[in-house]
Amino acid sequence: MEGFSHILHVLTVLLLLVIIFIFSILAGGLGPDRMAGFDPFIQYGQWATTLLYLLRFLTFIPIPQAIFNFCGLVMYNTHPPKPKLKTSTLFGPFICFRVVTRGTFPDLVKKNIEKNVEVCSRIGLDNYIIEVVTDNVMNLAKSPRHREIVVPAKYQTKNHTLYKARALNYCLEPGINMLTDNDWIVHLDEETLLTESSVIGIVNFINDGTYKFGQGVITYANEEIVSWVTTLADLVRVGMDYGMIRFCLKYLHRPVFSWKGSFIVSNAGVEKQITYDFGLEGSIAEDCFFALTAWKEGHQFGFVDGEMWEKSTFSAMDYIHQRKRWVQGIYNVFFSPLIPYRYKGGITLMLLSWVFMPFTVPNIVLVPLFPLPMWRCVNVLCAFMGATMLFLFIFGAIKSFSPRRMGWPKYVFLCFVPIIIVPVSMVLETIGVVTALCTTKKTSFHIVDKQTVLPKTVLPSTAHTVQHV
Image (cartoon, rainbow, N blue to C red; front, side, top):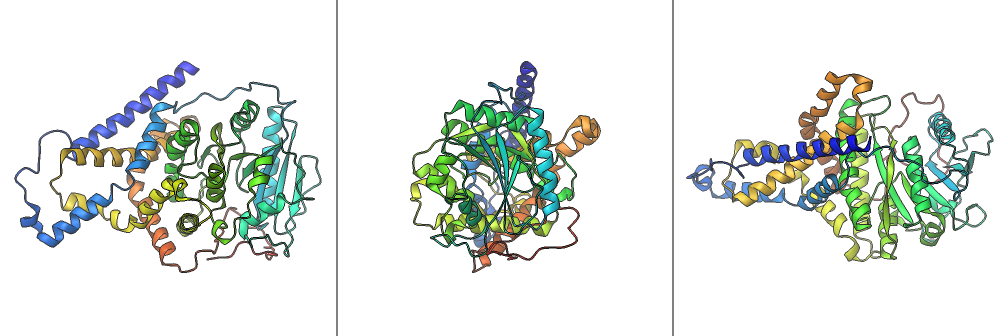
């Protein structure tokens, strides 16, 4: 089985190299110079040509991300075999799967708890509990396998932290926290589903004992797909998990480009030491703020084997709101004086890419309509970046969809549909970026719909937690 996974990895890398080669030819980096003798200043005029060159060179801002993604995809197996337990599940550190929710979707949370308990039971995990941290009482059935923590409306942190960070910090308070410093916390979103591979990966990661923090891969197309547009647009996130996130955590052992807010494996003692009381500036992207703070304090990170499942947003508007929240959260972290700038190199590049996205996305149309003479090295770099970013979508589809579940014709079709969806994804991202940058208040929080069938009653909020932007 391992030999077959290595063959799949080699084929995947070859596909990536073929796409880069094709892009290099199309971009003019290889082959005859099709722009020889062409003078854009005569053809387009001085000001238009200067503007076109400026817009073209702005597309090189995400080059570091492309390089990190390439390294992660090439250096490590893109089709790793299912992890195997290295030790018994009966005698390990205590694991707390912590889910933070507003309490708006109680049926969803209860259903996912049942599924996650079943997964843990299948692999024989016994030393664990699922904690649901909520603003509204959910009346979970009493069980030794789960615990409901209701955050009081009057609870206020020392630094007036809000939203999810406030709830996470409440769990660390004396009298609420039931964990010892040797226990472990696995942070999940309310829609996150465990898989056998992810639980095995978590147990192996914890028992290895090398790192205090880790994260693994999340896919978004394993269950019912509500919106094909947003699901296909989210395929790039799967590619980035296997690319730059894996490279940063597995090779550099640092969250250079931050990490996700779910599938976080954290030592309870160290988390209690860092806390989540970051104030307003750490209330939107608390995951990013926490990761950079842990890095600042000298902790190293690792990569966790296995995959968890989530769903993409249910509509294009929720997709835009989600991206808007990410931009605003990273913006607040970037300008926080609590984290030195030497730890912000990755998020600086992310912010620059977002800020200039409204000016770089039009190149999708401008490049074929207004070709420009370029040095071959520039064309090769442009081809490398474009091909790598496109491949992240294709690879995300390869990992997210299953030919056994949907048949080979549909599977192959879905693996190449991202070629069409990339422009749509970039436009939606750009709208989210523009709305984020144009919003003066960057400390509001929008919650996206996570349940296909809404509950008959929606409980009113009892805390300063989630409000529509």
